[in-house]
Length: 177
Ligand code: NI
Image 1: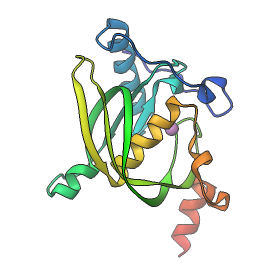
Image 2: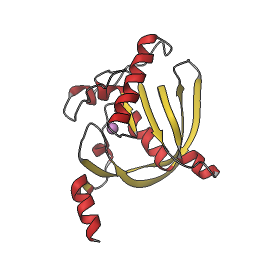
Image 3: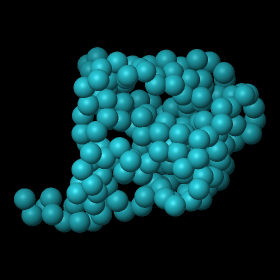
Image 4: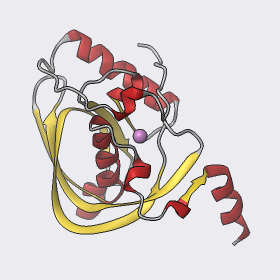
């Protein structure tokens, strides 16, 4: 396992469309996923997409902690997941606006509007199909990570660029209220 270097906004790999993975069970994919999980945990991120570690392939890792006590909580939380060749289906056009950050835009936060109820599918490292319904922050993280596979960064999804801030300022000014 290794901690990988994370590409920052401006690197061309972050604006390219990533390629599908033909062999999800291949050893090099398993190693990439393990290194990405280690990199994500080290950087304290909720998710990471392969292009962010300079690999233009359709693979994302994420986890969304939650108590999972109710059905609503269950859909809003996700275990540590490796998702290969993901696809997203929007279940409700209603959007929610919430703060996002990205390991490729260190120190920044933005308010992003996204559909709040989705179904997503893809494959795990054993080649098994994963299919889940997601709401809340879980739905947000999956959409954010999958956007990376199409070369999209969260500022491109922001309805109001006045809500694009340094995290340190956000923390500072929130404290004043
Ligand atoms: Ni990101």
